[in-house]
Length: 135
Length: 136
Image (tube, rainbow over all chains, first blue to last red; front, top):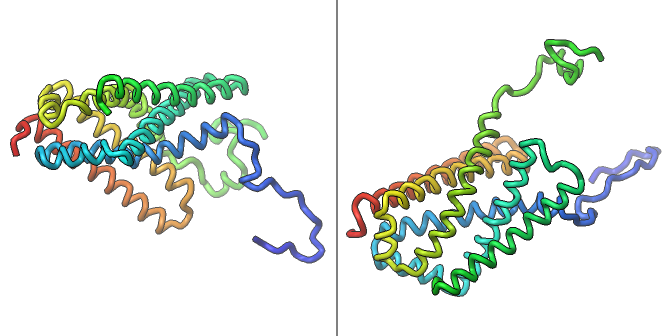
């Protein structure tokens, strides 16, 4: 922080970065980037799956037991949410690239839509997993 | 300011004096990020759906699944396009938040190594199973 020079007139300050009221478009902007980072980490689980499978039955079963444990399932559920939130955020970006969806009401609606999509899609995938005995 | 057909109205006088303009590169990465995003819409949806099948098939089921050329090719594409999209996305994040040139360069290099290394390893693992089966 810099100290104002003596005699300087008090200048208006912009609000601190943490002082913004959260709103849907801001949240989705942040979520898209954060879930991109989360999916970055999660993708190594996919690479790890291929490596375990190529390493033989013993390695594969150990890897799948790890993913099937409770902490493993929590991570996988988070990965699922991250993928679908990032996908929803990415779809909004593709829409914007087409020059559409910039109006304030539309941007807010698509932000909520992306979040709703992530929740519904994640629940659907894990419900199907439970129903088909994949868990 | 009148519109100059050569420099346009958006160039500031200082910018014109310095001869600075756009970097004249970078559009390729912008487009690449979007093309990979469109591809991943389909590949990731297929991947999540496949994971549900693979989760209950065990080792033999997974080997059999990857023996199908369609599954092998789609998983290869998911790995190649996915890790490339990851590299581009993390590059944007690093460039946004890291100001120190050396730190930024090191992180960008590490990001490239990690993404391309993981991509190569995953591709070889997929090909090994797809072409040689599960026998080790």
